[in-house]
Image (tube, rainbow, N blue to C red; front, side, top):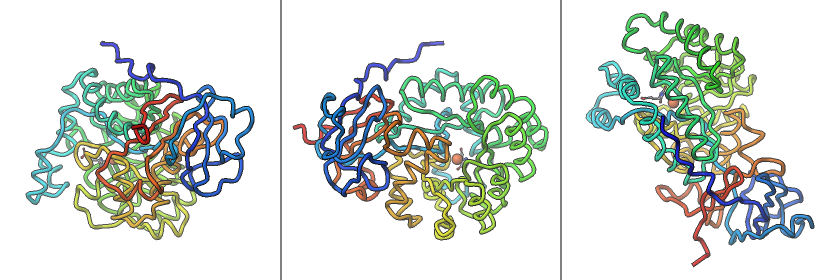
Length: 424
Ligand code: DI6
Ligand code: FE
């Protein structure tokens, strides 16, 4: 196997005091009260945030640290993309054309396209080829400030190929210096060799694939696509039981195309999140609230499928269920490489407020991955992951779309990108 490029280790340390910043409201915990837009500082020591707060209250032991000029930029936590299928072979632009010509997602799937065509391409690719194809995609997401990302399997659908995907996910995290949470999605689609034998496949997922991959340390969480065109509620529960036996948290592709009451089932297993949820019922909402599950909204898939059935945002808000926003990056229904675009679309299509959308790509995204103590908030004691944006106000992060802001990125305590803002 070829050695991975050491891309990240060469970046400069972010240690020092970052002066002349503004802090995005609601996304930090300061060491002293902060007046909105008052000049603020973030002190970084040994790769961790040592202090954050107003310049006027900077502790004496931070004042002497090496100086970084934030040039008046707006600081947010590093972004968190909490639902992606980033590692796969090939692409499906042909299917995009079919859908534009009138075929539905379900029709494409039944015609042998859809997920199964990505399965073919993923099985044919070597681990190194999958790595090489995913690397530029991940780089694009990171260039926009993503500091933690979930990557699912689910295009291998056989032990060796699922393993390949998950190993690539781990390698990507090491090569690019980004927190990667791997999710086993062996129950994503029925592999063609199991046609008509769904139960046999689920048995294999539970008794062979998941235990083997978990034993190799490749699985941080377990997901299922619970849907008419995928797996039933009973099959989903079987996979959840297998996850529980291994002590792994679960999450669910729930109620995307129809209401299967999958969210209520997932909540019974203490799911970290229920994702898509366009057809989520009030009963599902109550169950999620009780379990503390995050609602992950995926406007990219909604848009690409030209869906019109909106997720129940007002009811989720009323119930106090935290809402995250993610790309759902995948080759079929969301070939999207911008988390900021998803924040914009969550506002425009789903009517989230800007603060909700920004919490969705930071705090709540982190919670959906069980990473709420390390990611999603600028606070002392945490690893240094933050982004400095050349914008006047936080709303601009969701307002502009299709733009690539010239941001400074501090990831894992290193300067991963330096803005030119204010330097010329
Ligand atoms: N829901 C989705 O939106 C993706 N997977 C899933 O379970 C679509 C995956 C694909 O079409 O390749
Ligand atoms: Fe998905």
